[in-house]
Amino acid sequence: MRQQRILVVDDEKKIRDLLAAYLRSDGFEVAEASDGAEALAKIRRAEPDLVILDVMMPGMDGIEVLRELRKTSAVFVMMLTARAEETDKLIGLSVGADDYLTKPFSPRELVARAKAILRRGRERAVADEEVLRFENLTVDLAKREVTRDEMPCDLTALEFDLLAAMASSPGRVFSRRQLVERVWGWDFFGDERVVDVHIRNLRKALRDDASDPQVIGTVRGIGYKLVADRP
Image 1 (cartoon, rainbow, N blue to C red):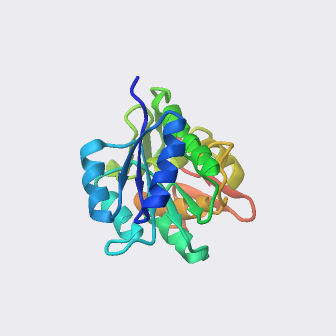
Image 2 (cartoon, helix red, strand yellow):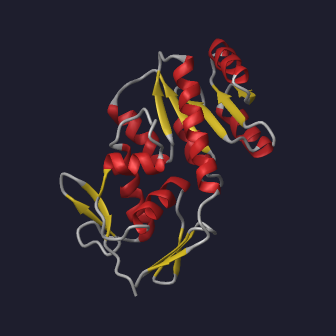
């Protein structure tokens, strides 16, 4: 089995060198990029399992890189930033980041988060070969495909996992913490409100109106549930 590949993208060489050293000591294959254009080229060429992406870079910043990347790739992305503002975090998550870490941080914490993200990838790879059918929705767990009213829905990896978690127990109310544990893993370090961002994006992809939900319902003060009926 090949080593898992991680691409570290940061315009500061000292940070790249530090992170690469810690990641290599834990058995990862590491590549580096110093700007957005170089990062996109290396992602297309090397197909890494995880991209560690700095937000504040000259030229094309990390948010722009992530937007461009999400047009063609579902690779896991961890964002790094020196700014702690809530809006920065939510922008990164809404564009499709899987995790977010604010500088300064412990390299050991970064490695732990990287391992947690990549473990989720392995768990998804062994999903049951099963198709979950509802009146207006089909969730194919094996092919990781979703259709609504017989039309395909373009979901990110995280959006699919959120939907699959709820579709596995239709009608059951899942708290944010329960969804975080199922999708991100019990050792997720971040803010549970990341669930709200991805639910909002998931509803948009499913063409589901939050004010009159046909797929995902909100239970105020608790969490979310699948409201689609069985055929």
